Image 1 (tube, one colour):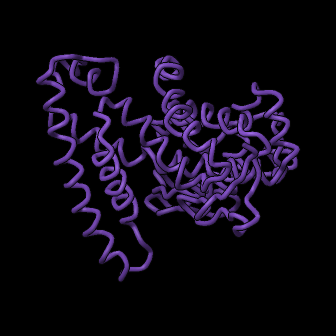
Image 2 (image 1 turned 30 degrees about the vertical axis):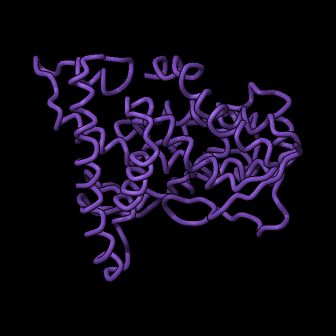
Image 3 (image 1 turned 180 degrees about the horizontal axis):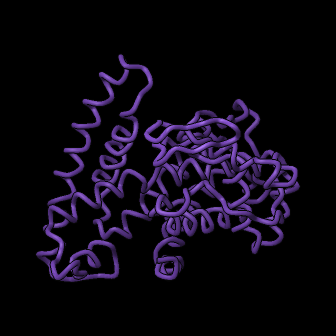
Length: 305
């Protein structure tokens, strides 16, 4: 999968990131990198990889509905009474929007090197996927297509801009870009915790956990475990890396990991070409907040034109 995604860097991902976003923003000398860049570019890139038409209204609606679906779980029961029904309506709207796209793609008969083309040709146990099955699968992927990459990129930029020496280091040596992504995701992951059910009786740190117990596992804490990472709070690009939990682990590994990494690498490389990139002092300093789906509310920056 990683090899297939890498083939898209120059043909799909870089043209979207650079031509449709960075070069459009460059003359302005300033931007809210969250809303004007980090939010739209992953959605635009991954939707093109799906095989969707470039229709701004469709893309905007799907992104909005996806956020409502993701926002459904709430700790506050009263709030959940609002968000859960909204998510059901949004999920149905996504299905009804994607299905005609899938049907039209099949009708054209042009199987391109994208996800829709692949799913229409691949066989599982001698059977091919129906349009409805493909639509349901794509709808699931859409939920993770944008927001996690958006927040991971924004969190990375906040951390690098807070450490100008580190930012200059990666600007001078672009081979450090993958390290910068890994290190910032280690230091402040988008998903701070994940919920799991204990599959068996076990003991962790002297605490007994019975089979079937719901457990909240802190990824953020594990990524800063001093027994695993030396000086864990430091932003250190040349840190000897250990297994990183920010994309999950084992069978729970994020399906979109390779696409997200490729998008973030291209995006950071493009950001490093903006001269004297820095926080905009006219706005409050951005803060990375939240437990899950962590990120800043805005990311206002300046650069020299």
